[in-house]
Image (cartoon, rainbow, N blue to C red):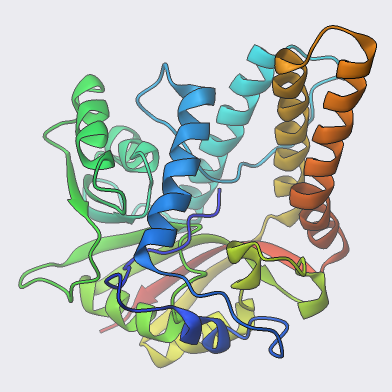
Length: 318
């Protein structure tokens, strides 16, 4: 989950202005300085976790999922991994439902899909011709290999994201960004999306936004520090010439993903822990502290309305 950018600037450009533009929290603190190196390092970590959980499938997902029913306590690790992956695919299915028929058979730009899992989804399930933007140079060949293994090599083109302006004749029926809008100044990013869309084309977003600034975890986590509000995002979209067509709040269904993720981390910690009682207690304490730091604030915010996980579909009218 939580890739940090989509159309990423070159390494010399810091992203501090994006924080103010997105109404980020704690304006009195020193803003995190995000560079292309930071984004690449973050995506490498996401890719490593995705491969650890889903390495046998070409469609490796690195984003939040939607869960309607949790498995019973004590579910084995392999089943948890399968349910986690199913929930991530359910997110894409729900986003496609919100979009309607627009991506079917069309030209799609999939921004920041890390290892190309979502790009393969659009190609396989919706017959789209997909351009997948990745931020890590070493992922280029890996995504091409996954596309070849899936029999989609002719349908998925992979490009390195360098922040270049739209290319001549670059025009898409849909631009899809799953958790890739939080680090950049969104107004600038949305203007770039508008330029890449055909008239009548759609931008589809799945991302987390704050509703109350105090719901965001006051940490050095770069992703949480750069969350923006959904109202500000929609205002910037209107300014960029994109009209809202669908706005689905799926926060309640996203909460379960983090429960699954926490349960899986318990299995992973215990698998590495010593078998003595002291070692097991230490492992459980470690995973509980990690969960409090990374998951509980997010779950609480999604449950009490301080945060919103939203699916947004916006259309370029002209």
